[in-house]
Length: 315
Image (cartoon, rainbow, N blue to C red; front, side, top):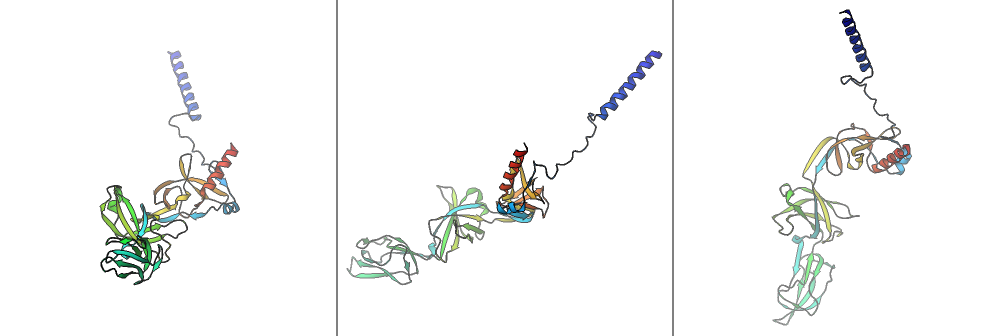
């Protein structure tokens, strides 16, 4: 009986010792591990040293994170056309032979200026035709000596002080587009974008393209906008204020994560961020940055490239 008690006591002591050793080594499933230290600010995997001179030479633009207004602005594609409300088709009053053409394609025309003479087939007498508006000849459909019937378009004259921007809208956006909405129109490289409003929404769709026509009138005081050229537009449907945003060009991807390069005293840190809504120019930041923190906005890819080089050198 005494031997049995001794064996049991020995086993109990061994069990306690084993448990103590298990807990000491930290292998217990319920034992809390000591928190790991956060990566150091200068960790080469997340930080790159770039001095201010190099930042300037690389044209890295620095901005501060803060509140912004996002614009819900779908992109539209279209082309410029002559303003048909300021356009006239020059046709003969009486059919006959074109005796003279006083204008060429592209020539300016004054109001009430004689631009062609036609000899009537009935009276064999010539009569002058004047332009009822001032403008520019954008179409010529006759030659001297040719026959001009009732439907012959001898000239088309358009007042080019304004032009139409005609856009095609896809079906998903039909319910969102309305007359009066603002539209920013990109007119091509080297031409300042134009601001206008939608003045017309077609009540019918196109059977061929399954799109709807919308139109804006664009000022053209110097005549640089030419009918037939392609343009793009962005219609402002809604303005959405957000508490924190960065320029969309600041967002980079590293190892499948979105990061923003936050600036510090020595360079930049690749800061993982969670993003929200975006409008192309600005992107909402839900976490990862604080208001007022400075970051690489334009040319942030240069910082990413420098980070990749420093990581490769460490390896």
